[in-house]
Image 1 (cartoon, rainbow, N blue to C red):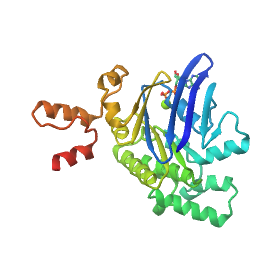
Image 2 (image 1 turned 180 degrees about the horizontal axis):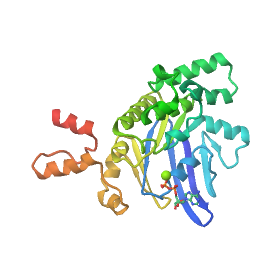
Image 3 (image 1 turned 60 degrees about the vertical axis):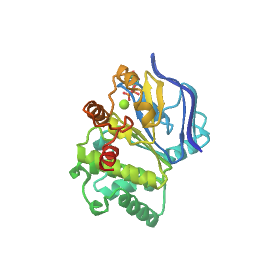
Image 4 (image 1 turned 30 degrees about the vertical axis):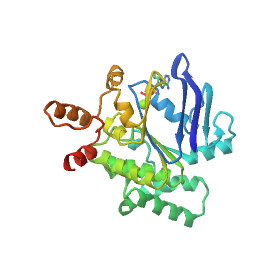
Length: 272
Ligand SMILES: Nc1ncnc2c1ncn2[C@@H]1O[C@H](COP(=O)(O)OP(=O)(O)O)[C@@H](O)[C@H]1O
Ligand SMILES: [Mg+2]
């Protein structure tokens, strides 16, 4: 079932068209990656998925409710169901301890304190940060900070999390931590929409949506999308490094299949 559905969505910032007649849907429980060159509309799109921005034309339905005609109660419900995590972890953490930060959302919902406690403990466990619940957020690594930001969203019990380049400012270790956290959440049925410029991350998603100038350039499985190497390169996007490696290996007579785009898939193939 479609959790989010966009129909002919356009969005204009004054004279700039950021989204142009975009239609697609996100299924409940899926892991969708969104890629595209700088300025292609990824962040604008992300903000349409929970009513932070409303379409200039067209319609965004979240769980069947149109964001542009929703009343304020419905908008709050949409924002609870579809949580957002942004690029800069330092802008998202506001409290003096990790657990206070994660409690912020449920406190705003006016939940009783025992339930808030339960939610905070649960959310920190999901992101592997229980042991640092009393830590000061500014002392954490980038990857830890983003996991706390994810826990803050989780504490609202969302159906979906939209992340706008959450790993762009992280080192490889931090990126891996965030990635594994997201994969764990998806396995529990939470829908994940990840905007990223790391092709290896996109290659591990179930489906990839490629934006170009606010329109859909490509959409499909990683296999389908990365099969369009020429189109991607015209857009200034690269194939995942493993695809390049596979290409070089094939030239040397090691016949790695062309649909291998991730380290895991390559290792599995080499060891089989
Ligand atoms: N607040 C804004 N005011 C005016 N134009 C904007 C604003 N934010 C983004 N844009 C423009 O909208 C287009 C899409 O931007 P954005 O959604 O940020 O793309 P991406 O996230 O893919 O880099 C770009 O042309 C950008 O310059
Ligand atoms: Mg952006």
